[in-house]
Amino acid sequence: HALHTQCTPSRVAMLTGRYMHVAGHRTQTSLIQSDERNYYRALKEHGVHVQYYGKNDVFNPESFVSSVSEWSSHRGLEYGPLAYPFGEAGYWSMLANGSDVAKDSLENGDYRAVHEARAWLAGS
Image 1: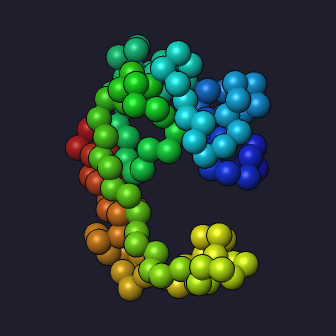
Image 2 (image 1 turned 90 degrees about the vertical axis):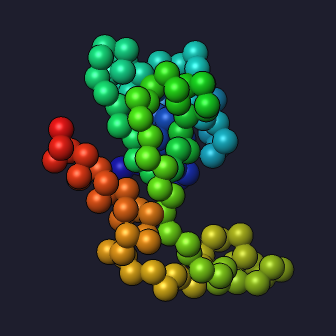
């Protein structure tokens, strides 16, 4: 179950414990602000090391610093060319023709982030 059809409002709701409409988080650009409490920030303030992997599409710059101890910014995979040319109805769907990079290749940023997270946990 997701609280919103877009990822950022859903992640904001998950990390703050508040519905996205309560503080106006209704779009992809409505990030957690520095004056908003969130679970990562509470953990960090109580001495927990918060290791963050992948893209940041939930925190503004100030709240990111106060919520995350360390960040590895691998950002997924190149998706290849868009499936529809500009002007056709499907252009804005974000559908792509795919990538030549294998899903289990370290060239795939998502896979690399999981690989590094597992290595970090094994060393903890």
